[in-house]
Image 1 (cartoon, rainbow, N blue to C red):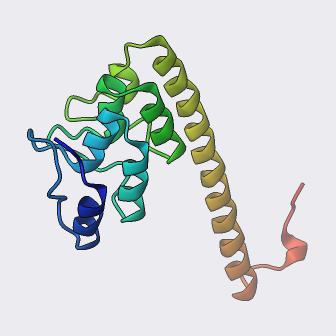
Image 2 (cartoon, rainbow, N blue to C red; image 1 turned 30 degrees about the vertical axis):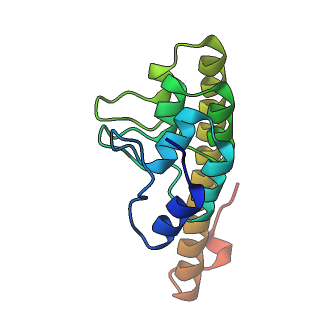
Length: 151
């Protein structure tokens, strides 16, 4: 079966499931990940396909690439910011499904990087919230700057 990325991209732009899907009903992005068609992955993502879209087993394209696709597809999906910690319907992450050592190592490194990014984002969110609360408290006259002990 030859995959036509332009047809799939048109369907996604119309907010429809791509007509060009695997005979077992896999979404086009999953099919492209399994086959290692990184150009097709890019075309589908440019057409607003979600990098972590789920199939009938709640697996993402990364789950499928880890199990059946080439290493290059796994690397490409991670570079496109696929969630390496996503769980399927059996609560398995791509790391749980990886059997090739190079994929296991790649996912472990990516998982650590994603976790660190989440922590940085959370720290920024908390800092903004504290700043807003203090700003509101000061403008509301709840206390003055002289009353704050910032040591």
